[in-house]
Amino acid sequence: MGREAYPAMAIRKIARLGHPVLRQKARDVTREEISSPEMRRLLKDMVETMHEYGGVGLAAPQVHESLRLAVIEFDGDSGRYDTGQAQSLLVVFNARVKVLDETLSGFWEGCLSVPGMRGYVERASKVEVNYLDERGKPQTITADGFLATVFQHELDHLDGTLYVDKITDKSKFAFTEEYSRYHLEEGEPEATE
Ligand code: NI
Image 1: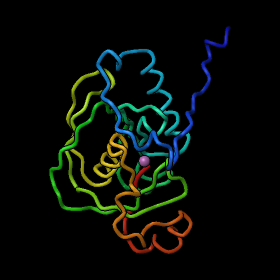
Image 2: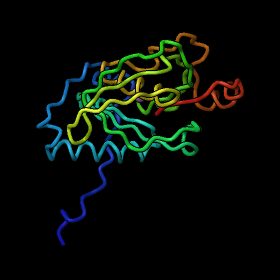
Image 3: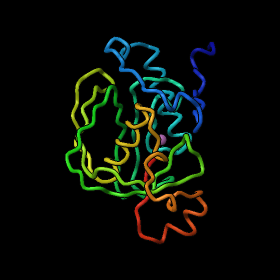
């Protein structure tokens, strides 16, 4: 058997805060691209990378690909976030977000591109997302609670926005350890990536 029969795990390197790719506006993907072997590979790698680092979502610019693609997946009780909510794998191309409820919900967010930090961010509590799935088929999903925050966090990445830009109370930006020690007891839910 050649090596091709056992393709190497492809954990991609994650761009960190300060890398220009995180600040670019990503471009839409064509339906032809969605079905291409290169995109299949990128998608597989993104899911593996998200799993490897315990993220609940990952946007393509975070792996140095300036494309409007994100993956989201989390269970309710394990890993970095205790969400009480679960979401099976969502593959989201060319997403557009519409706010359905402008009431703000706050979560302590983190980001694989800003390792070791947490920050409290308030976002719209309910959104509708229109996107193309992994087969290029149009889909609409309504999200609230933690999923609404994850969507907004991931899709912000496609416009070059990071959660740190959206922390209004800078006293609620902390290293993970200090977050756990001083802020976790405040009863504010934690979230994202
Ligand atoms: Ni992020």
